[in-house]
Length: 386
Image (cartoon, rainbow, N blue to C red; front, side, top):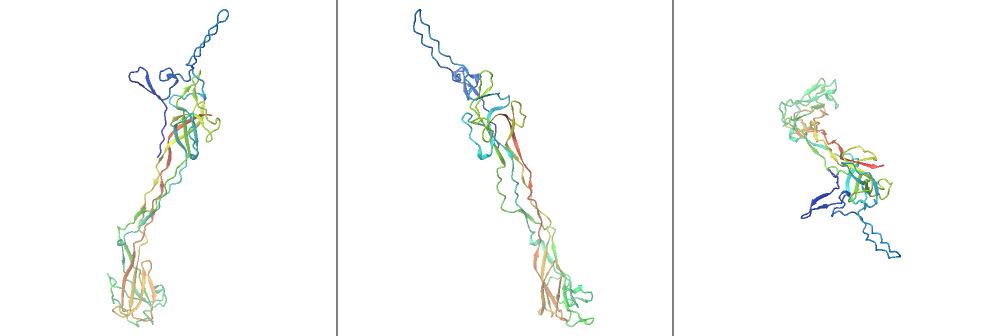
């Protein structure tokens, strides 16, 4: 956050060594004129006039020169002074940053710099992703349910007239070759071959309770934040303030282009820290800010519960009892059981299976949403002549 602070123009008086008069640092104020360190400005320096020539009856003496010490006329505008607690008067400019001028020669000092019209671009957060659970968190349980069917299509048990003959694997089977519940070739089931198709239950994927996804932030990170302020403010002040003769108003340099408002010109204003009201004759009110409170950020990335785990096995059947004469071999997924056609009446002497793939699934990411807000801070109020 950038913060601009107010500049207060004042005087510091310190006694000089061995001198009864104070040493003055900074511009002199009218109340200090006459001090050796603060002579009256533009005092007259005329010498006494020469005496006139003597005429008949004696000449008349010349008039004396004009003495110094009177207040000079204001070279700018005589305006009401700033009330107690206010800064200024100052020449105020505001407008787009790239049009900001230098302070004019008559008021060369920067008394304030600030901002207005806060319009931040939407905060861009990087996307959240979830790395999948460790592969070791999931395993595949081989199916024990194998059956032969008299159905001749790929519906297997779905055919109401089909007769099923168990060809199940033993409990605790690890996939090694087994001749358990073999079906001999040519076995008859109600006048039809018992083996015309075969079904295999889907394997079961098991995910441990400790399985979890790991959240991470997608790269690259969002781009740098842009300047959120649409308007700049600049207040220029003279090196010293003087009083106008007679009414004790303040002599203030005139804007270079009187009557032309910013950004083409300057306004004559007083200013005060905070958001305050304006009073006559300074009724044209403007509020600028020294910075912004930025509480924006992105919500933390997180992951949901693992979903979509699966596994795949390679299942094989053989006509002999030692897994030597292969009849068929197929991939069976945990997502669906298998049904396939076999040669009619073939013997199912043995089977084997092995796990070829285990997918632990994935998790839905959450987070990465913009949070907080950007609000203007450190206000200052400028009250200008309308």
